[in-house]
Amino acid sequence: MYGSQFDGGAAFSGGGFMPSQTTQAADPSFSSSKNREIQSLLPLTVKQIKEAFLLSDDKSNFTIDGVDVNNVTLVGMVCNRTGRITDVTFILDDGTGRIECNKWVQELVDSNEVEGILDGMYVRIHGHLKGFMGKRTLNVFSIRPITDFNEIASHFIDCIYVHLYNTRLRKLQGGVTTQQQMANSTSTPMKGSPAAPPHQFSGQYNVGQKNIEQMVLDFLQLPSSNADEKGVHCDVIARQLRVSMDKLMSSIQNLVEEGLIYSTTDDFHFKSTING
Amino acid sequence: MDTSSPTVFVNPELLPMYVGRKVRAVVQVTQSDGEIKTGKSTDERQLIIKGLPQVPLMTHVGVIGIAESEQSLHAETWTNFGNTFDTQSYNQVCQLANGEFKGLFL
Image 1 (cartoon, rainbow over the protein chains, first blue to last red):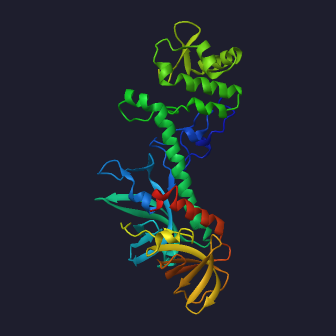
Image 2 (image 1 turned 90 degrees about the horizontal axis):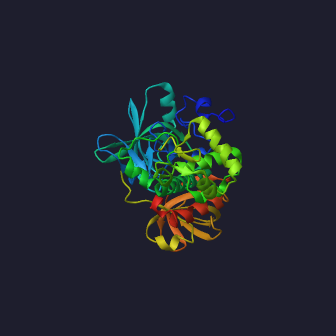
Image 3 (image 1 turned 30 degrees about the horizontal axis):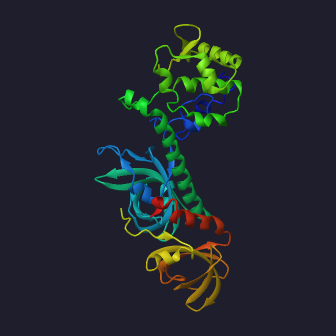
C-alpha cells in the first residue's frame, strides 16, 4: 500500500520546510500543522505579527491562525537604516505597520547583502520572529531588494491565501476534534493525522480502492465510532460510507493486515488501533 | 513596534473613505503639469498627484501620501514601479485589503 506512495519525507529529508512526517493516502494538506517538528515559512503582514498570540512569556512561541510561527517572510520599505560593525538595524514598513529588524553581519556574504540596502527601498525579508518584553522584532536571515514590483501585490495575496488556508484548516479540525481534545488533556501531538476530514468532504475522493481504505480508517477514527468498545459493525460502515460490501470487506482486510484496525467481538465488528 | 499609522492600499474608488489620511496608491502618469501630475489609477480612473518630481510618462509609480480629496493626493514618497506592473492584481489587493481581509491590513 505504501510502495507506490511518493515518500516526501525521505526524498527531501534534511530540509526544514518540507513535511517531516509521511501521511497516508489522504491529501497531506489535511495533516495537522500543530506538530512541533514541522517548521513552516509564513508570509505575513506586520499587522498580523502584532496580533500574533504569544503562547508563553519566557519563549518566543507565537501562533497566528492556530499555526506556530517560526520563520516568516515580509515585503516592505526600509526606514531608519542604521549600520554598525556587527549588525544592521532598520524598520520595515509594509503599509500595515512597522517592525524593527536586525541583521547580523558576520561574514562577507552578509555585508555584501546589506550594502546595497538603503532607506526608501522595497525589500523582501526572510527572518525569525522574536519577542522580548512585549516587543516583537525580526531577526533577518535574508534581505534583498525588490526589482519586480508585482512582488508586492503577490506577497499580500500570499498572506491572504495562507491566512484563509490556516483558518479553514482550523475550522475543519475544530469541528471534529473537540471531543478528542477533551479526552486528551495534554497537548502532545497525536500520531497519524488527528483531523479526520468530516463526511461532507468524502464526496471529493474518487472511489478507488486506496481511498475506500482511507474513508474506512477516517470513519473508524471518529469519536462516535470509538464510543462503543465493540467498535462498529461493517454493515454500519457500508451504509455510512455508501460503498458495496465487497469493496468494503477487501478494504477492511487490507487495513487489518496493516495493523490499522482490528476485529473485536466477532468478524464483523471493527475498531481503529490508533484512537481506540 | 508602531502600527499606529498604517498606510492604506487604495484606488480612487476607495479614496473617499480615507480623505485626510495617509494612503498608498499606484498610478500610471499620463499628464504632467509642473508640480501636478495626472495619472490613471489601477481601476482606470483618474487621480491627481501633487508633489511628484519629474517622472517619465506612462510608467507606474507607487505613491505614499495624504489624501487631499476624493480624487487627489499629496505625495510624500514615491517609487518607480516600472512598466511591467500588473494593475489588475494590485487593484484586487486594494479591494481585498479594504474589504474582506481588512483585519490583516488595518
